[in-house]
Amino acid sequence: MKSGLRNQLAEKMAGEITLSDSPGLALKKWRQNFEIAPGVLSDRLGVSPSVISDYESGRRKSPGTAVVGKIVDTLISIDEESDGKHINKFTSMLFSGVDDDVILDIHEYTNPVALATFTEAIKCTLLCGPMDQTIFGYTVVNSLNAILQLSAEEFNRIYGWSTERALIFTSVSTGKSPMVAIRVTAFKPRCVILQGIDAENVHPFVIKMADRDHITVLCTEMDINKIVSTLREKEW
Image 1 (tube, rainbow, N blue to C red):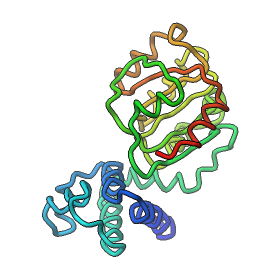
Image 2 (image 1 turned 120 degrees about the horizontal axis):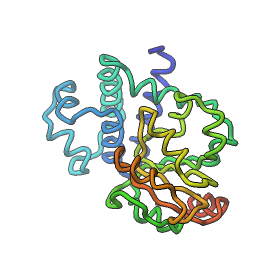
Image 3 (image 1 turned 90 degrees about the vertical axis):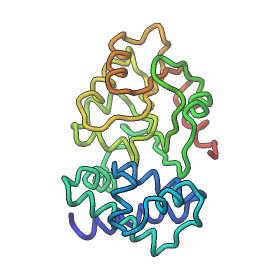
């Protein structure tokens, strides 16, 4: 990995953790994003697993910038020693190059937001999947433009900095096409919201594909401009 991109990624991660109102939760999010077990991280840092647990739960005083920097560097190093899958994903997002007619809005949450609270704000109807989850961001995607313009690699960039997010696809007719696009890519979102359609008109394959990938799917008929303005006003 090029040192410049590595430094930018590390700065992004460390900055989010140290500036968060809940540094422990932000730290936990990044560890989970890299799919690294607490025990693996603690071994590499030379500390007890309980230290990582205490940081992430808030039982221990928030780590200083030096400790955060060491943790971030360790997460990146562990990923580098394997296939670098997560590094490649996150660094590609630093320079996404995705046109604004594809991504209509994107936002990251420092702290987890309850999926039920998020979807209630934009008047969603549940189609399938569990609701007792949290998300760390959302992306509003023009479904047609995304499918027509993005390659499989570029499609992954709509995930922002975490797959633990809601993908809101606009103006869908049946919902089948966005789910097929997700099905053939490596990363899966926590939740998909189909905008501009009611539950009766969602294609039956949507639920089948969602169940296979363990994705919660909802729909909403709220106007997309109203969705964007509503979500931007929320201070979760």
